Length: 102
Image (cartoon, rainbow, N blue to C red; front, side, top):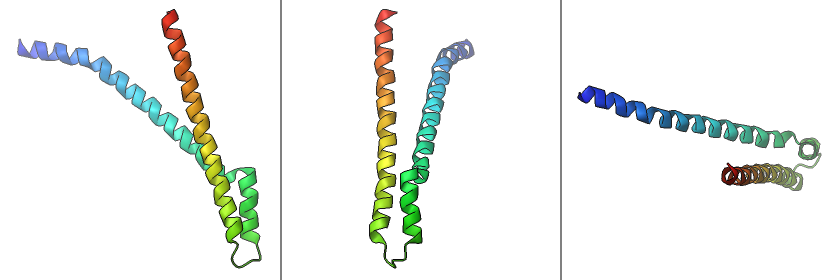
């Protein structure tokens, strides 16, 4: 009898945990996509031009170029982060609008 109750309770809990793992998986893929977009900032044409200027500079101490390059990459990453935040906010807003209509 105890085994039957245990099995019944476990079967009721299973869908929640599987839903949770699916949501976590979705979040992980979203985070991976965001990190991939951020890593592309290094190859951004504007930043890449600054990096090339930094690497080919005849100056022995091109700190200004280096600082501009890293600022460009940081700005690009910030823009990617803000775009992702706006997209999530937009999706959440759409989800809230759909629920009352249903």
